[in-house]
Image (cartoon, rainbow, N blue to C red; front, top):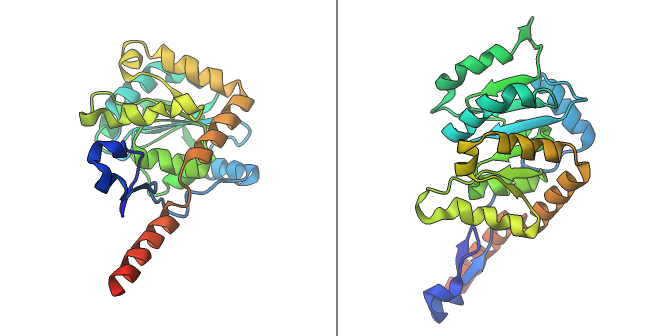
Length: 239
């Protein structure tokens, strides 16, 4: 058996190999699970945000995304008029974004503004769990985690990666599971990202539909199925 994390065109590999391919999905940590409205509000408060305001989390992953960071810098002031904002700037680019700390006000160890920035966090499930909307690169693992959390997502795929896998992942848009903003177009005009964010913040039904569809097409049982395949293979070898 050949287990894959994402769908592949099995016919490209010949009949014998194709018959062994199964799209299992990407196993994610158990803490990436749906949060109730009350838990979401609690997570917002723990992070220092106003629990009554919508929270947009923008993330380029552990290393960060220079283009997402640059776009956030350009639109942040206008975005804060409508929502709280959390930015995962990434370990690679955090120091370049320190000017945005001017928007992050603290008073006696309490967040006293609607913006907060991290380089990265070991508690990404809590930051993403608190979000009402996530803006993210289109890596397969991140998409799986967001699907497990049942979050509405705007993907900004990095089209220049070898193999174009992020662009392929963004095809989830055709299933009504995500919204997509082109990286190249966002780089040229960051307002396109701002417009898409505001559009979704104003449409609770659309956000709920995106989250539902992403969860529906994701392989939420990837860990279980992977273990089943391992045990099936082990048992066959014993015979």
